[in-house]
Length: 390
Image 1 (cartoon, helix red, strand yellow):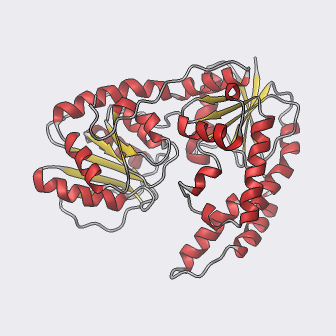
Image 2 (image 1 turned 90 degrees about the vertical axis):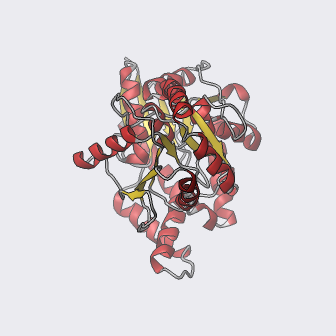
Image 3 (image 1 turned 45 degrees about the vertical axis):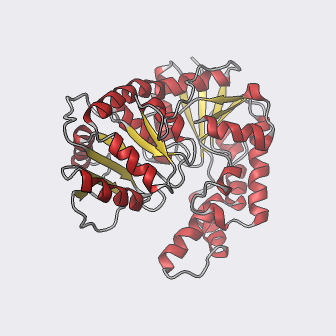
């Protein structure tokens, strides 16, 4: 039996680590007959906390809200060259502790692994892409820290046997920004952590579902604006919001707050929302490869997603992608998928496409890449306003 390590700055075996991606990948590899060995590449907790606090202090900026200032400084610390250095210092011990390994899947490149073991990197975006598709923390990094992180990412790509990305959008950056040989770069997709049970859906009335913790980045306000205009034409339409949304009083809108999958009652409520919805909508301002699109598709829901990032690859012909800054395009997409026949037809296409994005399928592609082969991957086919849907 092959022994493959999953390296990550944290506990890869924990279900909550990095949106459950290492945990899901573990299940997919085990289904392929692989013995999975967690390789947590973090320094001791006290050292990490001390380093993080010291680095965060250098990134504190004046804000109206001290809480926001602290959150942003901590996010910058997590992405900084200093934490990448600390993590890299911890990797030799972590790899030795894993014992004999036939290969390592390196999730993220904020650390450097020792040479000598075949490695496949796995990421949803590159560091240069944070310049045009910002995430909290990256915009605060000093020029020197940013350059150091890029240099470390380059070393990881050059050392790896394979560089695996969740989307063609991210893969293009590995090729263009780092000049990595094309035969080393593979698109392997991302898996689904939550699959709703099969149901008979009522498509007769439009019911939209938004699921997003980061309200601002996920463009929740844009969804509310578009829905208000849609409801003028379709008064029976409804919108359910899950995540970090503000207090709500808009007609037809129901807020459910943050629902945690490890709490049975909240998990069941989320499953009901997926079962009752007729369209998933999340036109984020920036989105590398949101698992939420795949989870909605696996439930048979058509999706409205963002052109900002690589998520169009996940949605494919199972929905529509829009410019997150274009309210008219978002409204047009919602009106289109408010039509019962169009929604049902596109939902069936989404369900079919979601089979490409199980963790079993992703693990198989990663293993092929790790072994020096070319994994089979789906080609992107995102639909835009004006293109046929379904």
